[in-house]
View 1 (cartoon, one colour):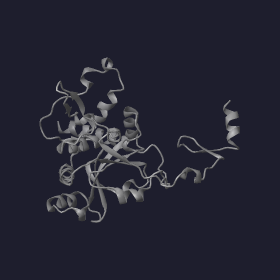
View 2 (cartoon, rainbow, N blue to C red):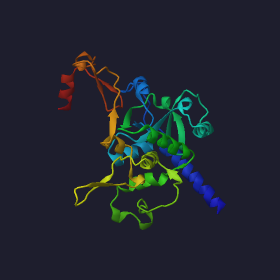
View 3 (cartoon, rainbow, N blue to C red):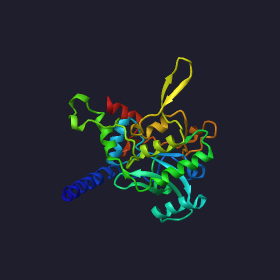
View 4 (cartoon, rainbow, N blue to C red):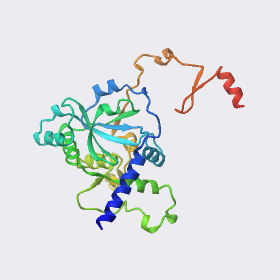
Length: 286
């Protein structure tokens, strides 16, 4: 039995390493102003990332969204007053006390603490829970830190991928257990499930189901936390989407001052094509 478990663990690790391997080159420039975002980000904000790994491509394909990963901002170590929570951070993070930190669930690593600067060169977006009280933000912080070390939920990735296939052709033993009730404490978490569980602790809605009662009252129903994906925070009407473009858009008609290169064409992020003129390009396509 131990031998079989060892083999399973080796296979899992090999698959995880293959899935998290980047398939696209990392660029040095993005359309987001990272420095500006670091000044505006607040405790409880959700950071969405446009990932470049194989599993990121799967998630984006299944969810039809550019966002493949989500993390929650917890602030700096030296900003946290609770000594027990500070001890938890020190147990899982050995970096600077003044570093801005995220909690996230990463494949092959589980729930970890990551410095915000790790995503400096990535395309990112910030989603802020509207009207979140300070005491509830502290509850989010406590919940996420208490989940540190939790294993990643690989089953959710498989469950999401299965939605690509007709239900009838999926073998019975492969059919999802997504809707099975689990009354016990969670032992696995994906990036979105971790955040969905955290916001459910303070009963903050993301994308709940709505029931209109006969009395005209509106009731909302919690969704299964394993159903959430990063794009749900982007789509939620209860989260403000904050963008930090590299250009100053506060000026009227700012776009008229942008410097366009008319002799180059970007080929969907796969490189630049040299053009003699845009008119020539049109003629070649015909």
